[in-house]
Image (cartoon, rainbow, N blue to C red; front, top):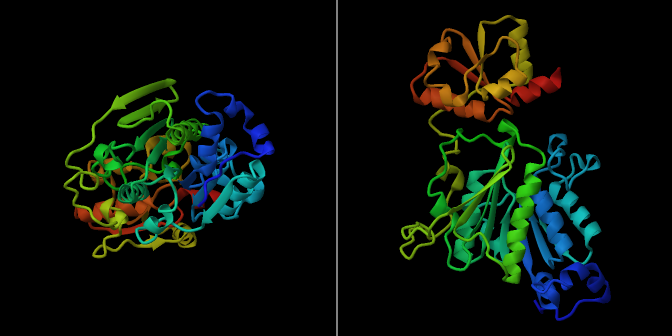
Length: 375
């Protein structure tokens, strides 16, 4: 692509507050205009990231997401509105970005980022910024960026806390250097399971965008080999330094990972083919209740979530306490395991079966959310 050598009069007016900054100026604004940034995720973190990327004058912005807008997104995913519910997120985001800055070219990928398409998608961009909410995609982004020699601006959020770092930049460490192995499946709940303060992704996402802009402009000190942690309750930042791992399986001289792998399997999220998990629909569950069948409802969400709302007569055994509190489960009854949306409950059943617990076990599809929505 031919690089732009000048700004239009309209662009000079739009970016005037950038242009008077000595560290940016005309040269810096042209760097932003000529840059191509890929944002993976157009949700909580993606919303502030994308809005500020467009506002800053990034020339080409790629959007990767396969989801649609839901009402439960709107308290934190500020790029979407009530009128966008059920709309593809990439289309909703594209409309807002084009309205904010028609000078930015918006490229959409309405698909999940996978091992089969990641390299092909990422190769045409200069830098990748993380707006995801799961470990398999983060490891995938990291490995693809290492292979393609692209910087990766990382961000994550959990309840009231967040993290930001810059990986694979200027010879620095990668995501695997800091996090060699993913957490055990089910131990770290998603936002839909654990909740998140609505304003938190705005804070973390804007910090990520700040780091990305610094990298493009080659100014300041990016968070290379540093992990910035934020606690919104204590209003406290912590800056932890870490080193590049000389034995990293992806970015070291002796790397053993030469191609993209199955990241669901790597993170322990792939269903075990030898262990079956039976699911029960909400209608089937209601039928069991109406017939007064001999059932026990086990809610594996954290206690704070259980106390907030729960299904009548259910007992609470948080996922991490299953092994210790297994004696509370009555194996003579049909056991209906529930969680927020029906994902952690399946992991709980796998865990119970793996430790040899014998009972008739069912995971409630849609979890407590489906039950509450039906009331």
